[in-house]
Image (tube, rainbow, N blue to C red; front, side):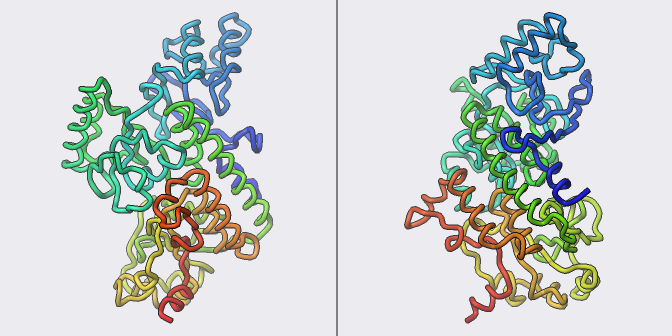
Length: 437
């Protein structure tokens, strides 16, 4: 299988762009069989990426006996156990964007019934928050959990910060319940909590279930699954976000297909992914997956999706003979970061763990405060600079900011967020030398 084929199956195939079918196998509820779908929402009878009149036609043919319901498991929109007129009526409401209920299968395979269109959502951790705002859902964020990134989170000034960090804490839970109580007085409630894994909900998974607040898993940092998650999350929050999410995925896939075409037939560049400056990312970590999606060959010795800090200043040298590049990922916000904090061990002692690597001066930091596909394209511009230029990466990033994060313009004095001058995208050793000069 060549690189183009690998990347093609690693992204959602949006019919309007590529016409390639890429499916996820997701387990439904206890009485559900495994279901393959790009948009795992009951009512998406024909199993494409949208619920429309074509799904109504499938349901009508099932009712008439012209098609078998067992071949269209998502046709049972109301989860009654069979396909009836009630399923058609529910699908019509979803098509029209009317208030109703929808049953989905999240990216952990859990079947969840929730209010549609969904409102008052709570994304947990910085990546999930950024993921939520990229397709126009910022006004639906009632509260959130995140680190301090004032620029990228500036669109959430009217939302409640539950607590800082990557998971829900006791104080955050108290604030969440207080907010839910306030919404109840207004005839509303928290619509759902979004996480990239259950651990982000801390010790409150059971409490959320008791409070009847859906917990939805979306793989927001996975280069492959995040596009599927965009379609799903965009759909359940209404027609406006659904439309934007489809465009977002189409733009992302176009860039990924361009990447695949440019590096097809090229030898894979062996790389090591780091995060938190001196931690080696595991083989299933989001950081390693970004390098893989960019066409690289991972050389980590860490298993799983966690990271492992380098034991000492010599440990990095064990990788030198097996790699050609080091990608160091970190969240820097949409600002210009000071290179000294990333290259000078006097500023941060963790950097001393990297200095003995023969690849230290050609290591590249990549800012995570950007859409997932932008991260992939920047990584590719590091691994394959002759095929994916820095200008292409910057141009694509600028396009995504202009279309999906235009609120960032309001954070700039001149009213224009220019990714070339207003924020750090990637940072090289030369940038450090230039800052010293």
